[in-house]
Amino acid sequence: MSDMAKSIIFAVCMCIVLGILLTTAATALQPLQQKNMEINRKKNVLLAVNLVSRDKSYAPDEIMAIYDEKIELFGVTQTGAIVEEDKIDKEPVLPIYLYLENDAVNAYIVPIETQGVWGMISGYLAIDKDGSTVKGFTITRHSETPGLGGEIERQWFQENFEGKRIVDKHGTFVSVRVARGEVERQVPEEDKPHYVDGISGATLTGKYLSEGLKQILSKYEPVSVRFRDNRIEMPEE
Image (spheres, rainbow, N blue to C red):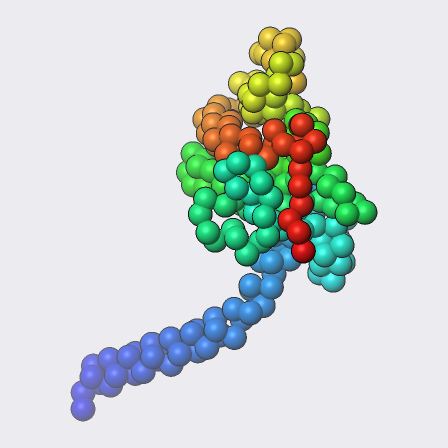
């Protein structure tokens, strides 16, 4: 057998062995990866309603304990009715997280999944029980340009959403939008409650995020109306 043939056989064998090792490692690590993803999801839901701090590290058990005590996942129908979690996979029921205090709803959290400039932007937006006021916002994943659109992951940007209104003074849904610059300089006085400061050099990211939030929140508008009118009914156990 020639040296060339031996080299090819050795290379093929190494590829097979390495492939097996990588597959085995990926399979073995999958449960841990899934658990970490679950913890990260729950932490970000908690961040949206300020139940955990962005400046503090938490053990996984702490996150799980706070989440299990305060948060419950439900579904919401096209008419705004809240239904059990097991109805979520049956379209057109949407997922909704409820922040509960003494069995009363303190706020609700909407999953955000929308197109950005270079990929999807994911996160959670929480709305107060009044159905009108943003309680918090968090970004969990994005592909925006670092130093430009990527600034949406910064604490200063996300905290800008707190206290903003998704309805105007007449109670009409208007969503919340990202301004093209500073709100104080760029937005008319009557619209300021619905805008957050934009990011310099990232106009497109702000535009995509604004449109995505409007589309998503409009789907949840029926349940928001029920919160505004104090007509929320929890599913019977």
